[in-house]
Image 1 (tube, helix red, strand yellow):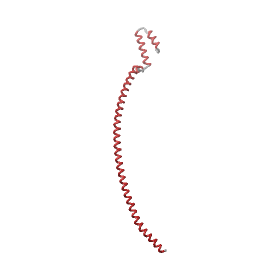
Image 2 (image 1 turned 90 degrees about the horizontal axis):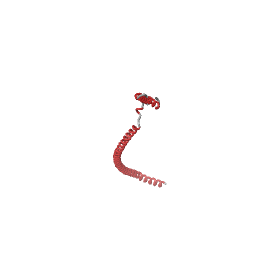
Image 3 (image 1 turned 180 degrees about the vertical axis):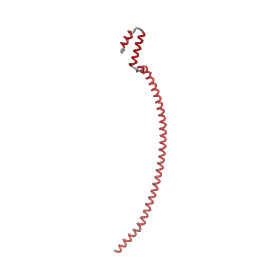
Image 4 (image 1 turned 90 degrees about the vertical axis):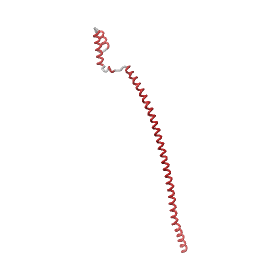
Length: 149
């Protein structure tokens, strides 16, 4: 029995109900042999039910994800504010250290200027100590040369 027409003819020619039942059972058996995965087939109703369940789960997950996102945003805002405070504190601390370093450098520069001024004064005095006697010696040597000539 490979077609529906043959099934009809077999049912119509069956002598009694028992023979008809046997023909129907054989048709189901052949159907199961030909389509072994037939019990696993899904109907539109099954698909609709599954689709509705999945949509419901998707909506639940969306809600959960939105809640988690909002929670994470709150945590991030808190963390960001905390980091901003820490950065401000660090900046102020660095500014204080920079001011201290600047004051220390200014003091050192004043001290170095004083030291350099003192060194220049000593050098000038030392030069004058040598220069004045040499000038007198030069004037004396020129006077002696003028007398000789």
